[in-house]
Amino acid sequence: MISFFRNIRQNLLSEGKTVKYLKYAMGEIVLVVIGILIALQINNWNEERKVRDFEFVLLKELRTELTFNKNDLDQTLIILNNSIKSNKIIASVFEAHQPYQDTLDLHFARLYSFSFFIANNTTYDKLKNTGIDIIQNEEIRNRISSLYTYEFSGLEKIESLYMQEHYVNYLKPIFMNEFITFDFPNSLKVRDYESFMRNAKIKQVINFTIVNLGIVMRTQQNLRNEMEEIIGMIDEELKKE
Image 1 (cartoon, rainbow, N blue to C red):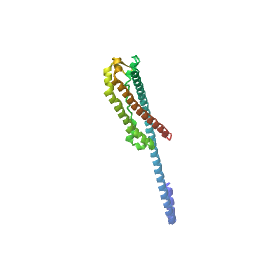
Image 2: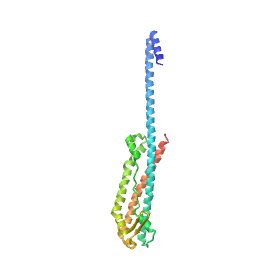
Image 3: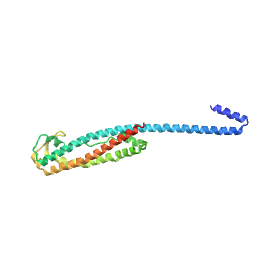
Image 4: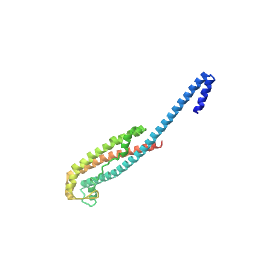
């Protein structure tokens, strides 16, 4: 091809067609420039495709991680909900002054049947190292960043404040002083049932526990719903693959 163009130029010069030669040379330069631009554009397309493909890989990994976290939180919510139910049953026993029954041992054991949620953030750390801007969808990018940066840590603080500190300051002394056998979360045998039921402070702590568990549960449920929404958004984005 190069020799073909060279022969044309030589023929034009040998025939003294200088003007035609210049026009041809200019046209040849234009063709070369266009060819270079096309090659650069194709290269850019290829690079953009590689980046987009890697974005889809990260989105799939994030989806897997969020699904794992959501399922883990679902189990935590089940445990928490059972604890709320048991606290409400014991509270109703206080109000009605009901006599002791063996079935109450299960509910005594669940007065503090609570599991802290610990988020898996391996993929998000990978995303941060890569650069979160690789995610083109701005809403997905912002919500993922908010979820991992603020909402997970926010839940951790609420769990610590409303459950861990509550347990140490109020529930643990009751467990240590009022119960004689411990089989969490299946059975807890009260030392003196009548004395236990007459203790106004214990009744107050149980009502306080119901409030605290409710706050934690609502926070966990909101977080769980947020993860589910983000998973749905990722699914829609992956359809563009």
